[in-house]
Image (tube, rainbow over the protein chains, first blue to last red):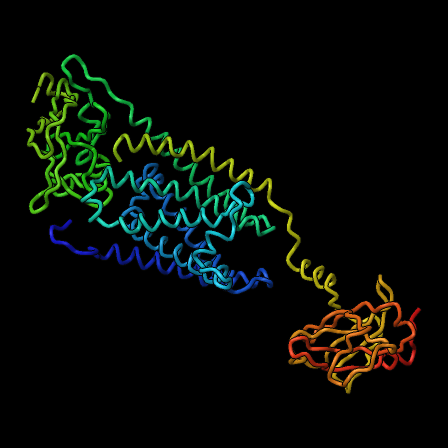
Length: 354
Length: 168
């Protein structure tokens, strides 16, 4: 976090992440251009380059789209999420270069401008198999470039995280367009089964992991009803590990109930930065820390420590008979709330209410 | 993500699961059968008269600038012609000029009685079908550059086909 503007806040983790990313992409492209002519002696060099960059972007998109659901299914994948936006920008650059090569190779030699030729060379919109697959790629590329251009925290802060997230969910439309681009393009001009098997495997993997993560999240989104006192029962005190949280869904959104230093506080589960799941993070140095990018909040008031200004809603917490209850009506973001105190022996504080 | 985005995500992937399955299935079902790449050029070359090997032995003609070989194809008599070295003239056409055609200056093509039998490309051997009246062998083959409008080479068909004129 920082209050002074810096284009990219480089740190050791980001540099290592980006180096691994660039080396991986470089090895793939060089390897593809070396191997493809060995496997197909009729392959021309420019076509190999076009497919090398296009497939690199498509594979990288699969990696990017895998990170989200894998993190939901297993927190060990969280380090991959940390700098995912740089991966997205890299993928958009690869896709753009693929498009440039296609324009230069397939649309450069006619009497029309290459960009005109791209849109006018195939107008068989009434056919499925002969549909102008190039336009599907163009549509996807525009979305990917738009997302790369608005991936910076400047846009995130000014659009707000929910709007930014909604815009960036267009990546799913871009993915669908790219699958159509590959199925109606590359797959129609090759007779082997390799591309088909790879494409089907990729689609099954992406759709499968997202549906699995979505199903898992649906289970966690089951709303817990309030009792007569308008309180929602969370769990027994000992069910919350020290410096960790228990997450419930009440009043339409998730609430993270943290236990730390003999106290219990409840905050919105939604980080103000990218709406990350605060309740899946932990208390570090007395501050609730988001597992996605390390944004921090004071558990008693939901405000980031000065000089930072992020704030999230807080909730009243009550303990009865060794069990934790939360009032699901939120206080305004940053409102201080007295934490509930955990006496020594959580089961012995029957009747305590704080 | 906030709850409404998670709900949108679930709906989006339910729709994607159906749509992408349909696209993949239809895309593979209607996929054209493509011959292996190495077979396609051979068929096209044969269709265009390119020949990798002559039917008989080669004979040098036109001062050693062309190799010719007689043979037969589905249309009757054929002649395979192969430039010894690339001919640096544009649009090389091959004409049969019967003996009865009007005589012409050495660099010009007679307009009466000439028959276009094919074209040449670089040093590739080209099998060309000859007209029926070449059976007597009286006449000549002319290589003509359409771009430069000049005769590049000419040789007697009889001399090209000797010593054995007929393979039937």
